[in-house]
Image 1 (cartoon, rainbow, N blue to C red):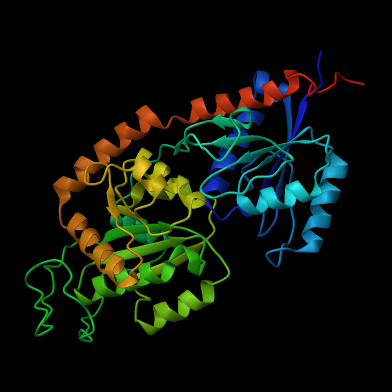
Image 2 (image 1 turned 180 degrees about the horizontal axis):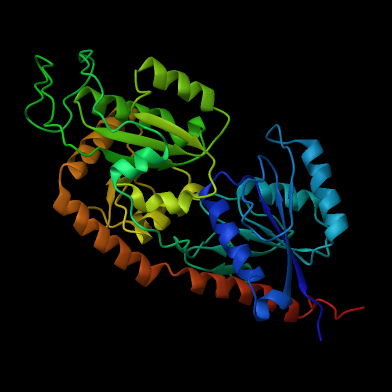
Length: 397
């Protein structure tokens, strides 16, 4: 009888799509059956609050303050000496950097490599979503991305959803265009006279979701610009930011300066993010980060159309025009802001297209991004470390 494989999951913050994926994965391993006795887990979070209280796994939260923080390295070292893991599973770039610095040679590091994650000689395995020519084949394990299962919930009407957050469903007051906007979508917007004619106001507001950390690198300001433009054409909508981050106060100032406080709402970190997703009419995702892209799959799995910035990862998830809409990233922020506005407005005004995307997206995720398969493949990686030559984890002492 072998002792349990001790696994330390390291993540930079819960405030990301990877945080949701790790929470679900760790819960599955701790949930019962053979895996429950075969593995012993802990989670170490480098920064932020431990708001994932639904995870039945011991968790230590550190307090990283800078890109490289010696106190965080010392804290991670203490966790390693206390728990003495056989496997350190790092789920993002920052976590991998700290783990490689703090781990001993006897501990096996498994890194989730998404996007441009760096390598290290101490890393025993890289879990990658597709073949990577920069890695040694004997260190690379290809596991396709997976959609975190979204719990079934009774659909809420727009009125019920707004009442949940004590918000009004009434249209916002009319605002005069500033004259600095380009024509948005329809020919009724005259680029010469800037004479914006309001869209026929629908009785039920559209609900738009954004699930991202509130950091400038995730282009939150671009999303606010899109919402300001929608407000100027008198679209009846509410936008909800789920997440928190270092630039929250800056974005709140922009929201209030652009008179969007009645339309744009910051909900902070939430335990029930996956329960809110099914109620959105569309998910807007303008972040270029591969580490935040798991939310795209979760939204598609529950039938929410996604408008996302075009990246290598989003191209893999979304078939443009059928299972979602991609925004080309030309490097000109004015271009993709206007394009995002046009395509978002186009999608919201076409109920038939939204319904078609709901069905196509759900089918696409179910066939290609199964979470149970991804869990089992990672379990196989853990087991392979135990039984690989020279890496056998010893039996109980």
